[in-house]
Length: 311
Image (cartoon, rainbow, N blue to C red; front, side, top):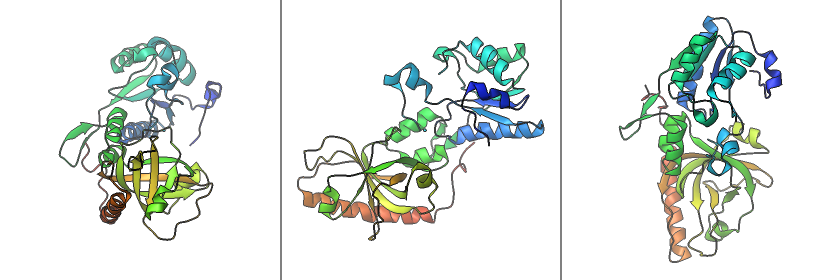
């Protein structure tokens, strides 16, 4: 795989390539389906697939106050985007997109706009049907980044994992906390607030990986069972800012000074509550730990199901 970061490098692109364009934030199973179709077409035509994305997310430039959390901007009109950018600079033989594709300023162009432009230009358009997946509740949903964000913000991390094709992960540097968890007998690792979609406040079962930087952390083979807490320290009444914490379900805690942490969300356990006294919170945390162990033990022996209910 070769990564090109600027338009000036487009001269290195293979002639008459297969192109797909999108934000690809999170690279969910719908994105993977489009990429798989593109790869198949490229193999049949003896050329390469080019995946074009934008960083940062276009909304972060056009409307910073409305920018969605990253799951991880071209102001051209749809016609100029195709004619002066794609056709002139990339020169694709085929463009493969999902049926909900939008492009150009104000997302004014859609798949029908692109279909008309394909007929006027020297490229073929392949439209990949929407990916549907069935949740554990039996409900069928369309796979999209918007749906995944909604699920995460509602705390439905297991459903989000079905659509992503993997567990959702928050990753950032470890920061020093106030030591409340240690005082209660449940020491925690505190995560710096990441620029990602943060799941709803609550308690979750999950796994943690540690590393010296982001890349090594995400690639780490060791996953440590943990209980996560996202929320404010309401029981103590003096902390109103959001805390993202992980309590490792093991006795020997590794050295974490200067480390990064990735939190892999498996299942929500409960919502956050304000307890009358710290002892009540301590008893609840123990129950959370016991429940998390059961969830994670079952998850470890559960057959892979991602995509099995998809169509």
